[in-house]
Image (cartoon, rainbow, N blue to C red; front, side, top):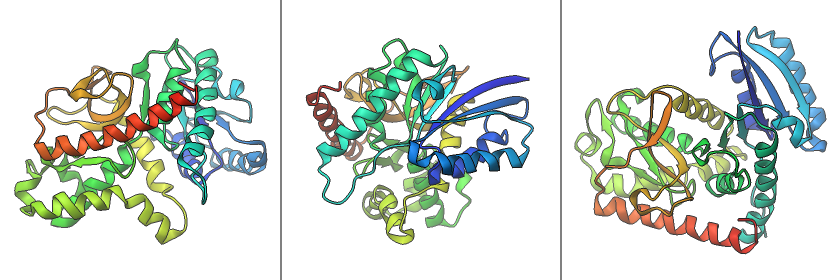
Length: 327
């Protein structure tokens, strides 16, 4: 039986709780793969995490191997093939943006160094904790021995939200919506590019026939969906985020169907004028196990303007972290 070691940071949180049992069940890596879970938390959260480990044990998943509960980065990253970096410090009332960047930059620089020193040579890093694009960039910078192509930030949840809204608009199944790509930063500047999306094989613009709605309310709904969920339930997205983690990693592992692509924030090499080294969400494909950016799309002037706005925001985050001496 094959074996895969997966580190999950912030594992006692709501996303972790929604994620771990699905990882352990074989849903992601398959029924013929044993999954060892390396669960990292702060010392104050270790008792709660120990309870989660008990529940994992009580599920008696045949695909679950060892469960390690730790506050040690070295132990958590030792030999892992996947590092899912969920934990980060959220912005609190009265906190300046620069303070938030500084705190998270410290966290993700340490995690990057630990991945570089202790993870398996084939490790891949999937960053969820926000601001996830810049956090992934920081981790990547501090893991210089690892190929940059193995660092990703999640925009799968944004894509799922966009697909769901288009499907809801037409009252059609969500799986009829394809190529609904998120560009840029996982933030309120992200751009859900409906121009290249299709619904049942037909252009979304043609199907919906309401360009003002697509350019206005649709984009705003996707950009503000996270905030709307916090306002509604008093907490940020958890189950949908965990579901998107599984979907995003599945996209990376499985070859993409012909003429389709998925959203993933990955390291730019200059595609579409994006600065090399920035972690930016692009249309991507997996082909023969290799992830590549779809680099030959023609963008509308409207799309180019929106993508540029998100790029400028990411450049600002990068510059702020660099000024702190952490890049």
